[in-house]
Length: 195
Image (cartoon, rainbow, N blue to C red; front, side, top):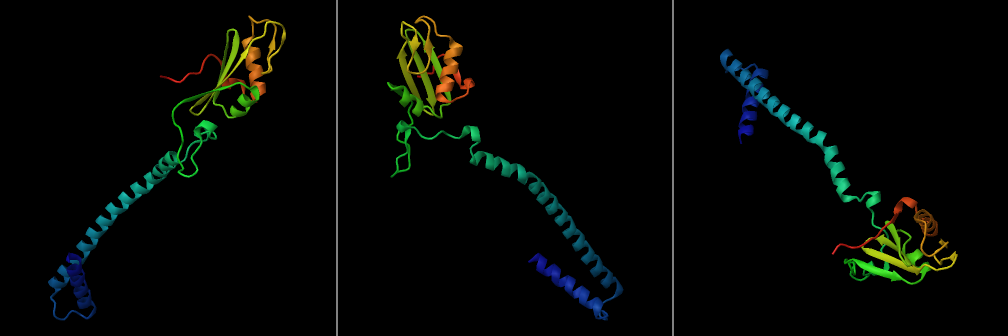
């Protein structure tokens, strides 16, 4: 409403100037011109304020877009490995069957190797048996093999000199070779779910 009356007043003043303004005194003409100039200055101030706010928003936009894209897209190292058999996605419902931690004990070395292709970390420890565990998502796969008394090769590819001694570096190298994983993903120790 205000802008409509302002624009009508400006229009009348400008029309009067262009038509010779015979009915207006010089002071009325100056007042009308001052009014137009003041309105234009006020609009300029408002535009300056709006432009500075817009520039501020635009300058923050790349940061906001980057933050949104980082929260929506998983990073390469955070991408989940392919679902394992115990954590398969139900085809009809599109939801996970199990989110609880699962422990699978493999009796066959070939099955263990196949299941651990994308393992996040491998651990091993020995007493009378060699226990190798692999963590993949919410699943711990475990393979156990009795350490023979005499000199021979185990099914998992490790050479045994005597039952009481398996060199941890040799075990690490053999597991890395057998599972085709880097040695820095293999540790001497235990993997367990917290209770």
